[in-house]
Image (cartoon, helix red, strand yellow):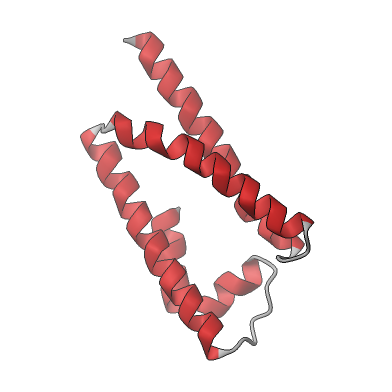
Length: 112
């Protein structure tokens, strides 16, 4: 999903902005930021795919607390009025991804 979202942001930044509840008629500086964020998202998606292909568990363990932190920060941005309510979807995605990853790692550890 991160890789796909990154590609979408590179090809159509306004779509990414609109899907998160942000205005799509934005200054060039915002489009540059969205493009840079999309490139980072694409990179993260590739990192996850490489980690999955090589079964690099330490990478996934490292992501759990940071995805939870991302969820907390993004939720706070919405609750304080800095970001629109639609941005809660991004926060929820990160939180759910962290929980799912943590559960999968725990299940895998018990299975061994």
